Length: 425
Image (cartoon, rainbow, N blue to C red; front, top):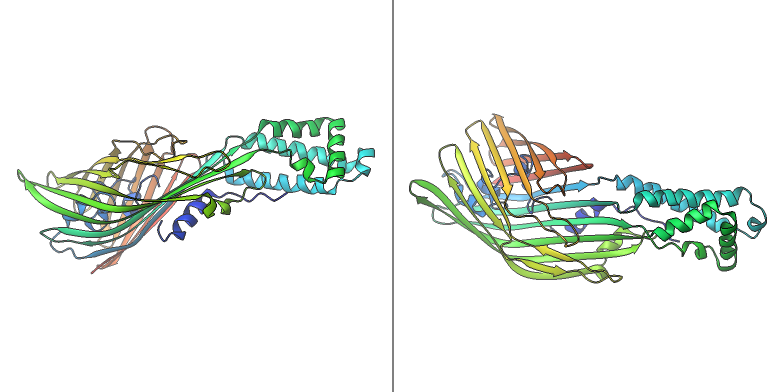
């Protein structure tokens, strides 16, 4: 019997992303605004705003130059059931159980001694772990973006690549496995019969009776677009409009296997992958209502797409790309920025998963010209994803270089981090 390998969801998401040269609760990564509760529709800077709301591209100041983001990255994992440690525990139990089964011999049929009781005890411990593991899941997301923003009074332009990955591991414990293991644990006659079967047919005669399974699903969506934005004056109010037509590539992974020989690295195997290429578009609007107040509205993936995974062991899923419309407001002066965003539409993933819909608030204070401190809070109003507290710091030691760092921690064993490097020419 193969040894189970710990299915680390975050490693799957990140390795899948990095394997495709791209890399969240959001469909974007922007470390400054990730630290401010995942907001940014109205508050992001022009150089990175194209990752969130293309209209912000037109809000460059006269002194602003070409800005390059290379890159902005973010990753988050949620493990409410402490699945990582539990998989380690069940791994130990499976190894021990397997070793006991392999050591059984004819003499154990005639002598209910140490190895016989070890066999029963190992079966009971494995049953305990399976009972706890039943229905448990963990999930991870990652996102990244690269952008080159070129401000212009006539028409601002940006070249942008952004991507996001979503992965989920879940277990499906067959109740017959637990019944079988409990019978070994509690019934000497039944346990002796299984030992006899193992002696005659080999140790696999016992382990082959176990049918529990684990599932891994992952999606990577990568966009390649050219954004354009322009500022207008409408009744004395500066209003910016932006649009990003984009080529959209999607990789879907659907992997299922026995929980006893599940190997998370197999999730990346092309046997379980299905690719798709299509077209989509982002759009946005932003307005400066006064010297301090700004509002914005962004729409990402305005063209709906349903993409089926490969069918594996009789199971397939559908990944849903749906319009994500988010409204935002910000207030700022020379020292402070405050922001709030709210999704007007839900975030969808695979059809087998529940939707989420996020709201966030955050702030930034700039005590020094080269230093910014940030904090925020993001919540899922549908209560299907973890609420998180966010924080971060930004450094601008040179006028042409910015480094932004973000971190997040929340309920259900949720944690994440992000980073961004910006260069201005």
